[in-house]
Length: 359
Image 1 (spheres, rainbow, N blue to C red):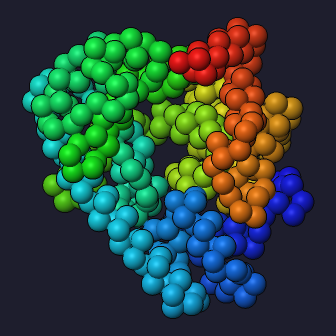
Image 2 (tube, rainbow, N blue to C red):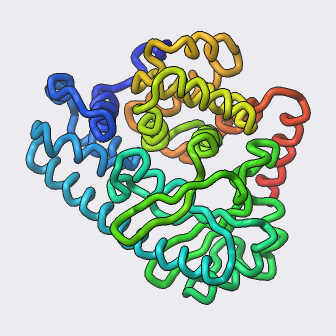
């Protein structure tokens, strides 16, 4: 798979190999070879930026090839991630029970359910909020319910703005007194032309997060399409997003992955799924031996999206937020315009971006 020459540092490559270990097992020889040249301070910075401390520690705790101070830092951060996730799992049970009692349909997306599906361990992957998907018609009742559970609205600023806010935005943000954050989604994408039929009525499944805690989430095809669109919305600048996707793909054969891709096109993921698959292939070999790779690289816009995502993800020795410099998000906005073919989508997306800037 094409990769920009010299794009990856040894620290980034080691982070990738450690993340691979979390879902596919690892090659201790490769990890030990990489650690010979690694700058550990830079490595810690990269791991924290990409929010993969738990995944990396799962590898290094077995390989035992990191200096004691590095091991102690990562072990402490992995424990903190697991503890925070356990608190969110308990809260997810409370939320699910309250929504069920109120008769409001809800799905839990990303977060803990994705961690369980990807790694077989809901406590391993770093997260900071609980994402709830509801029917837009239930927004008022859901907002009242969340408020009664001790959450306060953070974005928008006032409850009276909520209905208008959700007409323009996919979610609102809420926070509890205990510091747990909830994103309440009435749709999954900012541009409604992406995944137009995917929502609360989509096929779902129940995922056990811990003993006595099980919540509903999207089925495999809808989840794959959503993860592709979600990652593309930020041009995949954090390693944890593409690692989650690669972990979902890992147990599947070439035919199953091809069917997921075909389904994503029917669902309306457009070029986002081609970009995601090419990126997962470059880092984790997700398309090894699959004829789908040639099909995806045959589209010029998909190739550009993949290359732009790879550069943003791995192309800097010291990673930073796209918003850290003026114009740093320009490539992301351009990539968003290319998510679906056709002038109608581009015009609608450009209008959405302008409204977001002016809001």
